[in-house]
Length: 137
Image (cartoon, helix red, strand yellow):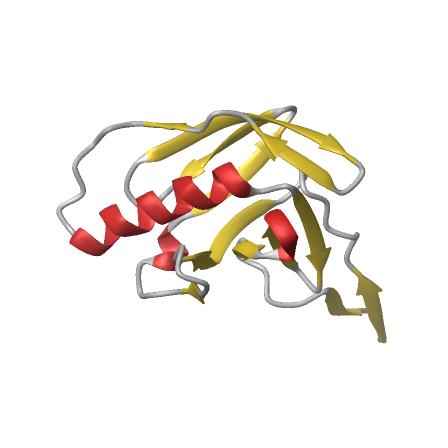
């Protein structure tokens, strides 16, 4: 029996499902709550799609190196009974408007705005490790 250690392929913006980990609150801080992980984003062929935790989000985007331009962001208009979900949605929509570039490090996606401010922090959805360890008989 052999033990094999294999690194997973490097994450890319467009080939990964991203789960929200932190949201710029518009007051100089990046915050999270029990609702934060309900939000997610996916970047697929110039189309951003995802969820604020309640409503669906959608937009176009363009990549130029590490620069990221996100077009006007739209969303469905369902009422979210939990008040913090409505606030979270507003913060996500506002943060997406300010994104200017992205960084991927250690299974984390950082969407960065003007002057280097962190707007959104996301993690690879459903992932916990950057490598796979398995046995072969």
